[in-house]
Amino acid sequence: MRKLTAKQKSEIEVLTKLPDDKINTSDIPEAVFTDQAVVGKFYRPIKKPISVRLDADVLAWLKHSGPGYQRRINDILRREMAQGNKRR
Image 1: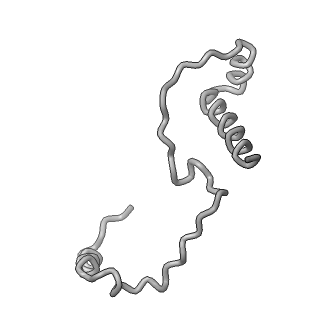
Image 2: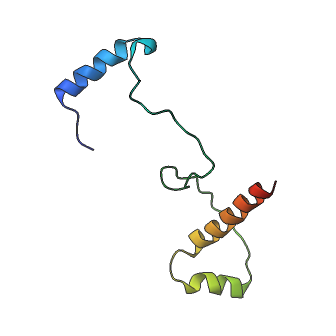
């Protein structure tokens, strides 16, 4: 991200002094919220370290695809969570 110019800084200073109802926001599109948001695109959930016991063959299968097996576990669980939410 580039640093702000002096002109941009002064414009922001003027805007911060204006009451909200005096700022023209007509060119800003309305926010649309959807359940089709992609996790990880703009939002990174907080990670919590845990200990989990998996069957050896399941762990071997996850590790077979290379590094990132913990992310794959999380992806699988997230998919299941999302499908469970759709069924309700």
